[in-house]
Image (cartoon, rainbow, N blue to C red):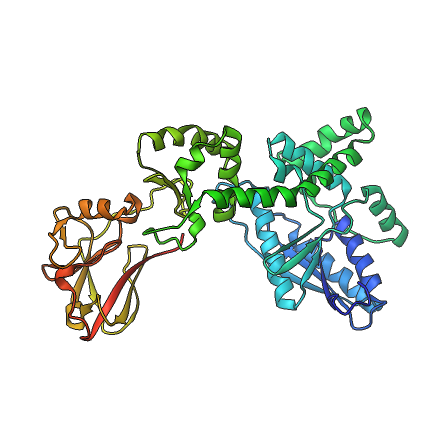
Length: 454
């Protein structure tokens, strides 16, 4: 905190009740005393993963209550969460993701734009080593950033360059009480195995290991901004406008032919960065290697393919990001019913369960259908043999040929067909059948299939 008016008057500290977060909360609250009106929020997340979770919350409440009575401007804010362990990720990863989401929600609700985290130099060195053991690249080896803006919150680690011993000394000097997480002794967790079994031997052999590993992470962080700009430029040079797949971002299409001509290293780096930009998560190293090896051959053979597990497809020389499915290993489409009756009497979005998406109905001047045509209309799956006329005076052709002519990818052909009796009104990706288009100027509605976001 400072006298700078741009500094927040409400600062939050992630407070588990452990030694490090207790020290940081106390130091922040003491510093806030010098700034009238400043408030420090202690954000506590109750995971429910430990039998001691209730006791930890009670301890956090007691600590903050005691400090507040002594005049420290501190207030506890807590939230109970449930960690979803059904998604296949590790307990550590899911708990961390849930915890940060809860911290961000509490901070925003309380009006705190900054959350302080108590990670120190030993934590940073451990993170660097764990990432190296997992085969991480530049971003992973850069470990934890001192400051990061995400979800409208500034996450700041003010003690990242300080050794754990300094925090231990601070706690002892001020006589602070703290709780110890019993899971810290469970060696089934990778960080605990490193901390309990590897770290003592590493320090005995290399006393400067902690400082050296943390310094390496810091140097890599210095490189990140330049590397990120270079990656952005690389991906931008390969991007092409999206079409007919419901993805609005132009960068969701990558010129696979141009990408395939790059060296293996550039192919892998461009793929990693492009996927992370769109998916919000990293593409597994095995998939990066596989696609960098396989796709150039598929492009040369002019083949199309879909990888629903990772939400990617290849069609007409373009790699397309389709979005991640809710069950990563399953197919995007599901068995459809014989027919779903529609009750359309006004513009709007009409859900057509179990198809994942909505039918958008809106008034148009031309290219739509008569209002009466939608009364008693039905949504049906493709049955085979359907004919679609793409324009006035043009012959009706099979849907497959029309899709191919317009370059509609296979994965965009699963929406419902809209029928009025025996007349095919509308096909997702193709539009309104020319035989059913209302005369220009007459009252009519346009139709559009909007796939549900994954």
